[in-house]
Image 1 (cartoon, rainbow, N blue to C red):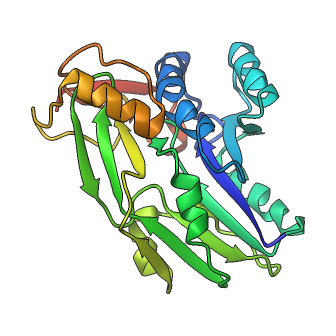
Image 2: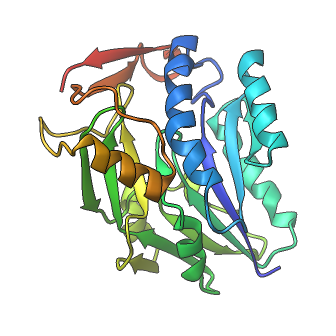
Length: 265
């Protein structure tokens, strides 16, 4: 096999084994995942990839029943981990697989991929020792509102990484700091001439991403059509405008135990 393409998404894996997201966090984030991320990946035109979703060992039985259903429908493969440091041994275990190159892509659990994203990545595959693929053109949507804007961003969160399977440890897209990928790797292939390729979901639990003031409000019919045709998102906005908010862990370092929401722009 020339390459194996994995798409990686983290859901509720703790940063540390004692830094476990509270159920209120899960209750909020799960509908975002089901409304935005899951339908966009399920609807990919290219099926030659495997979607790995990482869940924490502490995942509730109620959520595990949903996960089992998704696996039975062959939408994803679930991997349960105690904490984020366990990513590394998991990725290293892939070295024994029978492929020449690892092709990895990332998508966060509140973001979405255009229907042809996976195909676009694979169309830009090259047989090189190490290279990033940076697809520049995407958009932001303030979840459940009519605020939407397009953007062209280098080093965005939707990078893909090609690595030769030569026995060295893998450093796939999930483990890379995407904002520094152009400094970290000698070779980055910029893919600029595409239609909308990705969507960043902005919502009440964002830590970094935000929307600037009251702008970029689209007519509801136009927005719904764009979201459905490009990303397979059928969630209809229920309000025209919502102030963004930031999420923050209580405490610091290994003593962080839960999230609070700080409202306001």
